[in-house]
Length: 257
Length: 257
Image: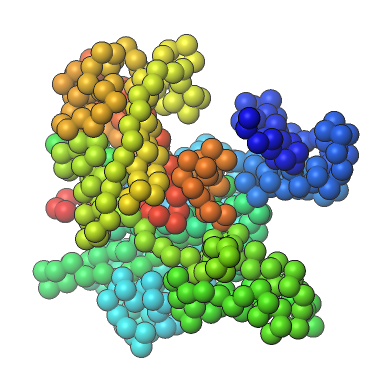
């Protein structure tokens, strides 16, 4: 005979099945702790333990004192390939992505520019050492005032010092255009996508709830210099899993898109 | 004055900083619960609470009774674009990916074929309803015997019934080649990548530890039929975050790769 699952697990299993089946839909309130305890003839602590399982799986959120609710997902469509297709002002590419969803939410962003020494992630991809200063352009993007993602671009300081790339304002013609004007047009990018739990700093900056992993999307941009491809920019995007779907289009060679 | 953080949080903060700085490296053993309790002049329960924070962040693993260890990451390079570039026998594309890492680990896979009614995910992408039967080709891929990822392809049963696509063995010429022979050559794919915590079933099939999110990578393949692009295959890949990095190459139009 199969070993009996603990009551808190069975509570979680039943509620999870209701969410998966759609009986419990987005934003709906779950039974209260007291209701669950009574229905399962168990303690309130056990009911809470069952609910916690689903909180940690990212399926429900606790909104005290109102109760527990099925988590709402309105993922933003994130298309890394759009970078090469449409003009790319800092803000407008973000606006464009929102527009893709035909959605009335209002995007905004905060831009900050810093000079720093490069992290290992950046050093390795730009082929520089820790002593080479980099300019960092940090964007925190929000929708309807809620933080949505972090987007930090790094370029060797010597390439962009004193240029518009370092302006802490929106650059209407786009920072990649600025790089192109300086002779560093990005002609090739490599995207790396890793999946992990957020750091405490990311959790707090992005106001992430429990059970919310992030995608770390690193884009290394290459320009042609002296006939060779040279890495000039590394952008690290932190995309909370509950707010994004990343999309790529792939067309077989010889076919048109 | 900033509010003092609880001791268990400070224990977690200090250990996390050591891991980030590399003082505590992959596979190294952390101080024991008793050592931490003594050093922080606190209870063992509080020390355990601090360690649990890092387990849930996916930074360390508990390997009782040996202790807690810094989590080892040996991510496999996963290149969705390789599908269109190299011949793609079921197993060989997986072998190829391992080979990319110049790594001596031994890949293997289990293949199972089923006939089922399509999930909502599949219905929506294949433009079919719940009553249209689909053939499902399920592959569980392992490295050195450890489960690595799940890869389930779905095609309307009417397209592949009685063909090699449904053979529960490795198909040396590749199942996409079989589709092409049947008149359904995939000429365009759309990749969607979502990030979430695993379901309990995924956790158990993939032997995932706590704090291990997954990428759900859905590939919809389109063939040209009667001059129009028609979706013919939906593949759902479940990629544990601790074992994969997903890579895409993007080349600006007019440039060669």
